[in-house]
Image (cartoon, rainbow, N blue to C red; front, side, top):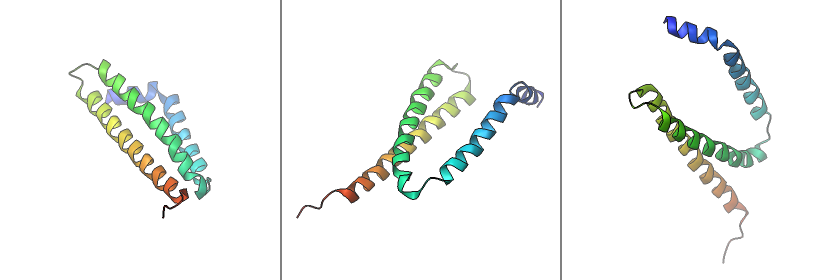
Length: 103
């Protein structure tokens, strides 16, 4: 418990930035019109691709006995991959709406 408190006190400014970024992100996304959500999903796919690559690189440099870091890295890879696949599915459905139907 003392280690956790020391970690928090050492990184207090980073925690403040994270909390403010979450609030700003929620406000910005909530103000976006419905029409723009699909293009934003495409941008989110690009960011998730970066998260996948970063997670794989971090997991590759982690010690084999650090199970927490490996588990969090694996979870990051899985969730980012699900986000990319879901984003491509949504984008594909949106683009199908604009294609002319073949007779």
